[in-house]
Length: 246
Image (tube, rainbow, N blue to C red; front, side, top):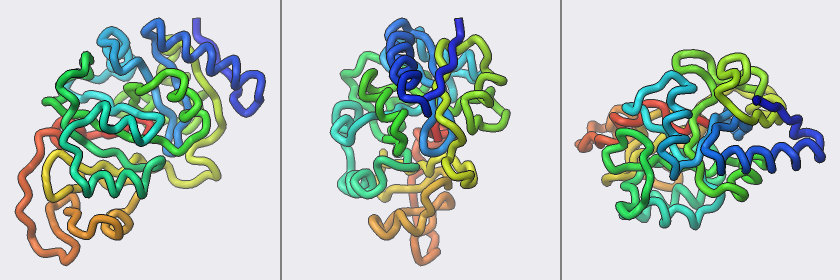
């Protein structure tokens, strides 16, 4: 049975977070707000739950979901061979609208789809999202909409598209807050050097280059617009959509 909680009210927020935590533990899906758009989430370490997430969205395993994390120190538990430049971006823009693709820790027991050994990570700048992630740990998350449809900016929008495929809807009001344009997260491929933007989004390339000047844009160009040789990352091909909550 689907339940919606108004997280702008303290009592419903507490009850909703508790219900969402229980639903995640039972391998069900939940919807919650992030700093970009609303996301549909499932236990990242449950293949059954991730499959439910993909089915709810009408998405194949060829489009694996990103993983949202509650803290920066979760990065090394989920990713390996993290470049120093990527750490600088994480320290500067997490929590926030930046997703980065890394080589996944080979010891992890999870199945997010056809990831080719990579994982896309983000730490959202949203209180409700952070509270839920603190309770559950890392979550596989994608934008809370059917594939090809408009990203949900409220839980009600998500409910209209995802209906009873989701156990819990956490309503936190319009996202992004303040009526700003709904942009997905910017995605950076950090599986090889130099780092490369594979999707433009909430954080402009120029801001990222203030931290990592050698960052390539989506066309493989350096800051001076000279053509740059960059080996296309298989992770980029596998991740056309980035953090769903983004």
